[in-house]
Image 1: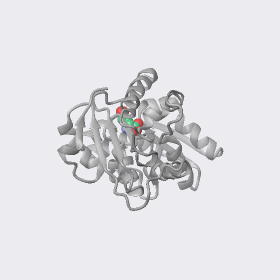
Image 2 (image 1 turned 180 degrees about the horizontal axis):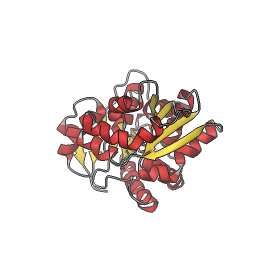
Image 3 (image 1 turned 90 degrees about the horizontal axis):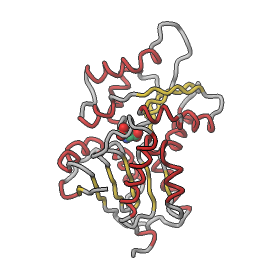
Length: 276
Ligand code: DGL
């Protein structure tokens, strides 16, 4: 067994969206070994019921524990919203972090007028986790949630811009950001799904340049660093972290599409097929 601080940090998502968080964590903590699991065989989680999401998430977490990890990060809003308390109960002693609290913090900080729109999967919006987390940070804030289900397959397909994508975004968001009457408009759009950041330029075109668009990647990375430091689990200076990627289906597709979320070309040798 490795000494505690040399063990890897595990990140998990239903698919490739969590790679947007992985990218931020790798930049923030270049010395850490990171292991990522995308449960592509069961994607999407966001249209499933809560019990199913909890069951899938527990299985994924169980798998990652086989790699002797020092921390588990649920880099999936849907899994965080549905299963974080259950994960914490199951894996006593293992630090388990999610992306909802960091995302809520980013939005609460970014908004000037306290009118925040959260876009996420159906399950995340229905569970109200973001609405509650922002209310704890800024009780006076007005938070509106909107499920944008189609953004997940669009991003997984690599369709992140152009007329079709913007047309779908207009359909989801125009009644909020371009209402016919003069009303106080939201000034912040929170991407409450780790699949959504690649769509950011298209979303900016749709909601307007004056709207702050925030996601949980950078704040989650900072949160991970702070938690590792607080638990004396940070790997020492000078180390170069190794990265490993696991997928539950079709590694070839993971390599192709994952590169878009990660912002660098993945090599086939880096991606391993696993079963849960
Ligand atoms: N990446 C997931 C999230 O952040 C959503 C994708 C899915 O529906 O499985 O919520």
